[in-house]
Length: 245
Image: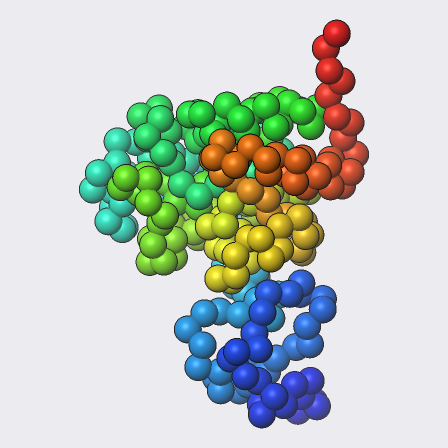
């Protein structure tokens, strides 16, 4: 066996914090067993990001067919419609939200309420149209009273999100809000710690920013989100939409 990069004695649960995959040394399997933390630390990010196996010959149509009229978790009990995702199946940019709200549950489409209208404005400010990107959520059914999805619900539904992202193979993924970012980055750290930071994720780039619903409640944060979107635009070679005269 080769030399371990980290000794087991050096692993302490309280020292685990979010970091980019390249900035943290590898951790052996035996070292991971020593840490009794119930939260999967981001220091394992490279292996965790690849943990969901890719399905050969997969398509969005096949994923939707496999999902069916899903009853795999409790969220199906009060849902009206499954909200699978919408947009360009070959999009260079994918937005991932938390889950459907009331309007989305009624229409079966993601981000069509007030937050959705703001997201559309954000997309257009980047010089794109909604049909140019792909939009989806971590969970496909609306949580009751718009609560955050629980861990077991996320664990049940997120494999379908991974498959969607693998099929689309975008150049950039933007996580909208803490739930989406925490799900894909496998962390419990608040989004404020890593918002606007690029991560390598399953052969693409991932960046987290605030959810449009948060911006409706905190409009002063729009400037921060615009800075994040400008990073995405630079990565994709996009030009901002010129204001109409």
